[in-house]
Figure 1 (cartoon, rainbow, N blue to C red):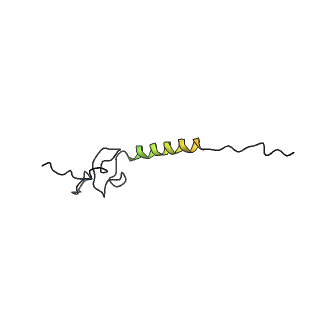
Figure 2 (figure 1 turned 180 degrees about the horizontal axis):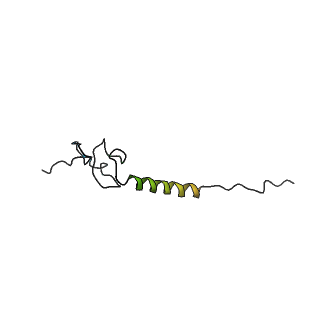
Figure 3 (figure 1 turned 45 degrees about the horizontal axis):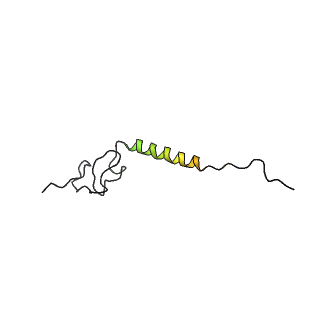
Length: 75
């Protein structure tokens, strides 16, 4: 029987979560307490934040509306 995977956060001995315990940024496995990048002090956290910023910026710019500067025509 294979040994249980342990949380890779320094000093933690809890079991790593099977499905959601792997960090998509650094690919390490963590327990429920350390699974979020902020909780395990992910070395790639700044890259992750920059990518999210760029994604949100692009989405907001694509949704930007332009006001009509001519105003409404009166008859």
